[in-house]
Amino acid sequence: MKKLAKDIRKNWVLYAFLIPALSYIILFCYAPMYGIQIAFKDFKISSGIAGSEWVGFKWFERFFSSPRSWTMIKNTLRISLYELLLGFPLPIILALILHNIRNQNWKRFAQTITYLPYFISTVVLVSMLSLFLSPRSGIINTIFKIFGGSGDVYFMGKANYFPHVYVLSSIWQNTGWNSIMYLAALSSVDPTLHEAAEIDGANRFRRVLHVDLPCIVPTIIIMLILKSGTIMSVGYEKAFLMQNNLNLATSEIISTYAYKIGLEQQMYSLSAAVSLFNNIINFLILTFVNKMSKKVSDTSLW
Image (tube, rainbow, N blue to C red; front, side):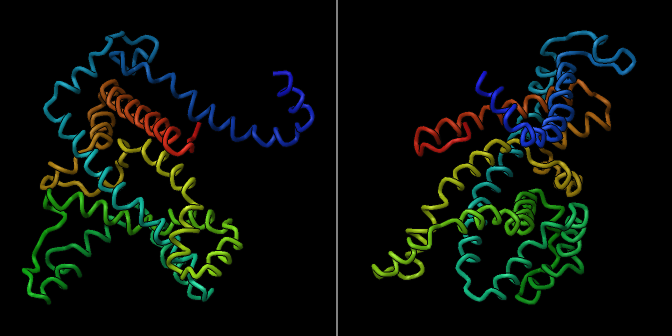
């Protein structure tokens, strides 16, 4: 503690730069945690948080006793694991490809094209999906019709298509942006390693496989640990906008359910209980994956 105090006195200007970030975290991340207690109360706006009656685990029991709860958990896990398995390796592959493009003009063009979808808002993206996948005038159905398909498939209205549409559109939107971290890691690879491998007769593919990839493994592991901590947190905005009565069987996830019962039905305590359960599961998964990573690869967050 004395060493820290001495370091702060010596480098107080640098520590001063931490004040805005720490203030933001305390104000918007830790202070709102006071409201978690409404998950264990029969919260009423008129009574306030402190004045509402304690009911223990009533809202958790109500959630788990509902037959819909396990369906929502299954839908959340299905979409999240699908996106993790398919979407996590693609930014790594894209970064390796972009890093090895020698023509700088083509490299910049490819980076721009792959980054652009990330800046499309969720509302616009869902509108684009509705247009492209329209059973009457959508480009996808038009292409299918050219190749002998029926051309009238309502992708947005079929429950079994929802996970595929959700995940594939997310991959298209985020792959380019997610590759930036790996490109930054690749830029720090020692060029002498490539020179030594080239002298040994390694072609470009082997240099990527045995030089580039091993050098960014720590970054890949850290990103995988961080991603595992959001397995239960599929964003509600996109799922909510894509929902309709026809695909509700697979599109109703925990986050959309918490949003609906909290803001539409004003059942704040139940919504808080569902969200708290969601975050606890994420924390447990994050801790487990971090521990396993530390044991297997000696790379971890803490």
